Length: 270
Image 1: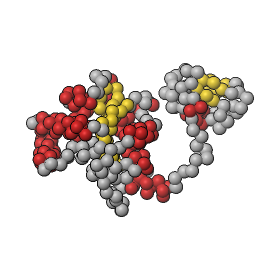
Image 2: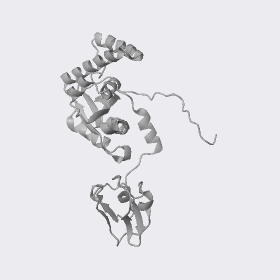
Image 3: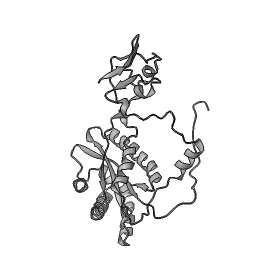
Image 4: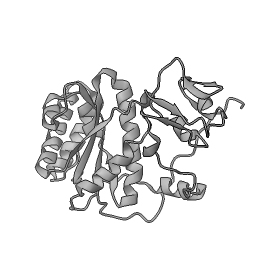
C-alpha cells in the first residue's frame, strides 16, 4: 500500500484518523501515517480529507468523484422513490441491451460488501433457450426437494400447475437473468454481499426504465449447488450463487403505491 500526504495542504485535522475503520492511520507532526493494522480499501481517508491532501494507490483520488456540490434528494423525494419500487413479474417481449445491463451492474458493484471484499461477480443470461433450460432445471430441482421437504411439495405442485398451463412460472419470461456469484470459501458473507449488490441493482434499474424481481426459486436451487444447473451456468468450482434477479422492461405501469404492514419497532428506552 502506497499512502501519500501533501504536507503543504494537510491541516492535521485528524478526520482521516478518526474515520479509519481499522485504526490503521495515526497522526504525527507531519500528518497521518500508516501504523499497525490492515486496510480494507474503503477509501474513507481519501474521501473525507477536506483539503485533498491524501492519496492512496488502493483508492486513488484521481478515480474519486467530487460530491460536495451534487444535488441531494429531499427526504420526500427519496421516500417516494423507494416506496414506488415494485417487483416486476410481467415483462415486455423485448431484449435488454447489454450496455444497459452493464450500466446497472456498474452501480451494483458499488454496494457495501462484507469487510469491503468486493468479491461479487455476475453471470447474465439473455439467450431465450438457455433461460427455458434454467427454468426446467429449477422445476426439476423443486420436484426432487419435494420428496423430503414438505413445504416444497406445495411450491412444486403450484409451479408445475402453472407450467402445465403454458406459463413460464420460474423466470416469468424475463428477458434477462442476473446471477451474482462469489467465493465458496466464505459462503455466508458471499450471500450477504450478493444480496447487497443486487439490491443496489434493483433500486437503480427503474431509473433506466427497467424492472426487476428476485428469482427466489432459482436462487434456492443455485445455493444448493444443484449440479446440472451449475454446469449450465458455468459457475466455477470455487464460486457459489449469491443471489439472482430477473430483469426486463415492465409490461405494465403502476399508478399507485401500495401500503405495507404497519411499522413495528421496540426502543431500549421504552
